[in-house]
Figure 1: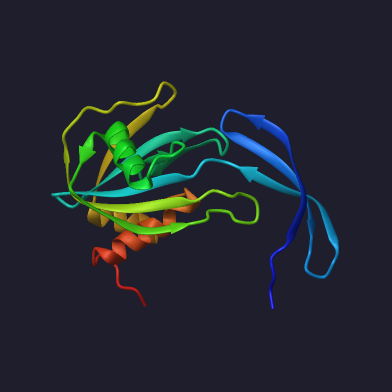
Figure 2: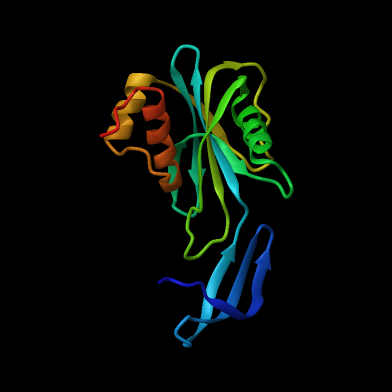
Length: 184
């Protein structure tokens, strides 16, 4: 039977902006000591799959420096301390795209990388979205808004052209929920 570990000590060894690294000394169920076990504390985040009234998908194109790529993604961002995920996703949708809708539902929530990180991610589906506001980007955001027809989106999804790993599941889940793909 799988059992949890006992944390004997936990020390923050690095902290900057929204990133914190801890080293923990852990006692395993069989009595062995594992040290150091590295845990990365990063903020929880949300993403939103937005579909317009014309069945276009609202995507954002942006440079991702760590990977050195221009990435085509669903909009989203970090959840502020104490902020409800649904509030965060509505805020991010409006800031990055200017779109809004009353038809919003949770697709799922996950732990994106549980062996290393302790954050959560929430993925939402928005239907019948309308452009109601100008974008309001953060100081260091450089985002290009992309409206993609449903057929082009499905083709890119099935051809594995989207590269943001944590978002792929949400893209498939939204396409299945919308009836665009059939789950086997």
